[in-house]
Length: 224
Image (cartoon, rainbow, N blue to C red):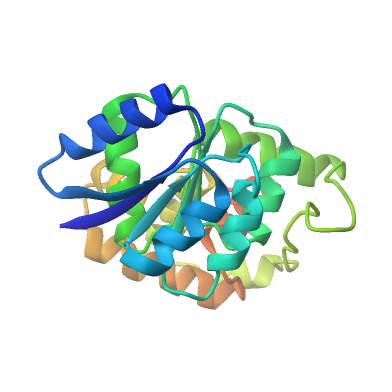
């Protein structure tokens, strides 16, 4: 079972999220929280696999809560109505592994929790495009906790070392696809996909899928 803590200050929204997740046969909502402080306390008490965290909450917001949970082994999946860049950057810098908008469909939310629980990053494609646009335009917030994550330069030589399949996988990562989605599109297994992603990160000198997605867009890497 995937153990989840749901942190959302609006009772009606939180109840809806809990109902959706609890309906999944492999997900167990072990605790609820109405603010960031409660979320951190619940995560430390129950040690869930995933904390589904709202951004704007009283006492302590989701970004500050995610920062406190960094390094604890608990993965934070940010869920918000706001796709403002400052929240995306803040969440990523705070250690969150996923960022979704609240207009996501119920089945997509369940799948996102599963993806994060498997150790993969998950960023909504719309957010990924916005994030990439900010990097490309040089308009990312500067300084403080909201500054965008640094992306090392990727040389054409390094890209040239990618195999044709790795090139295809990188293009899919650039679209914000999960390993499962990439596997389906390329007709390969998820295990093979994970291996390709790991090798891509190593060859390009990148630390995360987010950096790989940004690099893919900046370099114009698409499926041939």
